[in-house]
Image 1 (cartoon, rainbow, N blue to C red):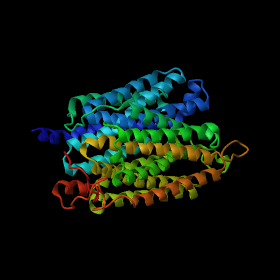
Image 2 (cartoon, rainbow, N blue to C red):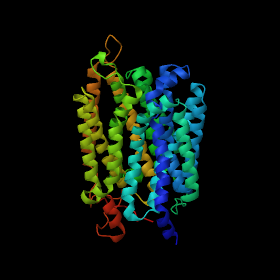
Image 3 (cartoon, one colour):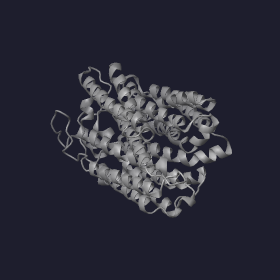
Image 4 (cartoon, rainbow, N blue to C red):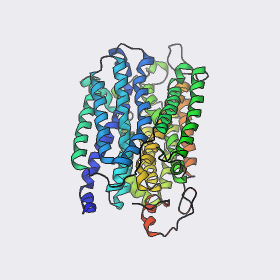
Length: 493
């Protein structure tokens, strides 16, 4: 009866999960094109207003794996609802903020919403029929990138028609509706991992992520060779090493290092890091390129709304391809889909680097980019979910999303350093800065394609410290197909 109930409601469950993930994804990027407006309204400096983005990024990086782990322990549905409530509360505070300090605190609270993604993946794996897993996971994964792109597209029209406060009011309304629907309609997942939160690993994880992302975020301002940046990077390495050692020795680790060392997990995480480098850097800097006055010798002097529309093709193609990626993965294997996605993404970055003199060229490049990222995101998520036992779905997918966010920080910081390395007498970056920056992103996606070749195929994915499972073992065969041939080291619950 329980199984029948889950099957009866899995489409409603999916709609609720999608709404929650979409609200979180929109808040990733809605404020990006309007930071100058927020800076003026809150009477702050350009350097300070960047913390409106940085605080959200840091908080999401910390809370994504933690909320996923708590959900695995006490129940994904109730933690999903709690995460949406935190996201709504942060949005309310941001909408009402009258100074930049309150805005930064509000964005940090919103970052707790990062937990929606691993929790959604875990609920899907627990509740959905197996034949529906690939499509559902692929669509939810694509929504994260689609929402980030759509946020940039919608920011201008919302600010023009209303004001920037509605960049938070609208997601808040959407999030509250999703929380109520989740409470009423999403059944509590039966799979639990007994234990308790190990707070020392949580503190160390938070500390090294803060040190790393703070260094990368501020490097363009402080200088890559400054003592502050170097000190923070060294501190991040030391704290990360301490975190790994504590996790290895913990009876109830926050992140199971044995799981993270699985070939299908670490290879997908490496690809996610490199894809994050490309995607978030484009989302941050392509609108700036388009808004540059044409008198600079490049750019189109576009408005916030017009510059956002340049990314609309990527949003559309990413969503459509993400929904179709599950079927493609069943035919050619998820590993091949990830490889294709990385190669297509690299082509789009090369087009941005060397063919950006006309707006139609940018539309074509961003449409191609959406195809590549849509394929890669959807297939990576399926591979991660299929590579770990059910009780680790939340934390494994959470770390994959987290690593993509870290990659985005690296990409944005590197892009900022390259673009601003040379300025024209007008103070604007020279065109070569953008050309070199986009070329760097093309190289990053090319390296991601090489990393995708390392993803295990049938018969090669071994449990760490164990032996290969028989490829024809019926309990693993079905989920193995979902992962494009990747075997699973633990029997699903």
